[in-house]
Structure formats: C-alpha cells, structure tokens
Length: 149
Image (cartoon, rainbow, N blue to C red):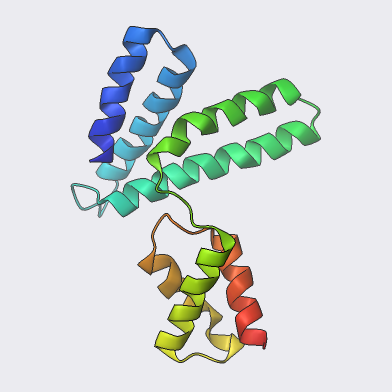
C-alpha cells in the first residue's frame, strides 16, 4: 500500500540525510494520518483516497508557486517545485490529452449523454472510472467541447 511505501521512503531519506525529501514525505504521511482519524473515515484508506490526498498536496504547492511568482519570490517557488518532484512518483501516470479524450468519448457513449446540462454527471463518471489518472481541468474542457457539438 502507498502509506507503507511512504513510510519506507522516510526511513531511506533519514539514512541518506535528505532533509527536504524527509520533510515532504513526513508532511504527506501526516496528511494521510489526518484523513485516517477524520470523523467517518473508513480504515484502511483505499488507494484512491491516498491518491486524492497526494493530488491535493501537489495542487497546494502549485498554488503556492503561482503566489510566490506573483510576489517575486522565485526562491520559494523553486523550493515548492522541487517538493512536487518528491510527491509525483507516488501518483499513477496521468493520461495525455488524446487518451483522456478517448475516455471522455467512451463515457459519453456509455451514458448516452448529449446535453450540456449533464456535464456534471459525465465529469463525475469519467473521474470516478479513472481515479488519479486524469487532469480534472482537461476533462472538464473536453466534456464541454464534446457536448457543445
């Protein structure tokens, strides 16, 4: 399971004295443990829940990068970018635009959806079928394009 993999990598980072990697991995582990003790949490967390936690961690860092660059703090933006590099290997490979387009097309056919008002249903179905593999913004754009035709 991913949590155990992160715990093992924490041990390796400690042995290698990799301070930044250790800090990032400990933060991820803390996020996972927080989710485990949250009210209503079902233990153990399934991989899709852990992937969602990791994606949120990357999203927070990307937002920070943008804010740091607007504030002319390139040094902090670079630090956040390097932290993303430590998280990325734990995520499933994200599909490219053409592969995503095909997944969206398949779900549209499966659900027999042609109305833009059902975009939310299509989004939910596509994202649910391929957890952690798709970029939500890209899926949203592709679903919108497909339904506007």
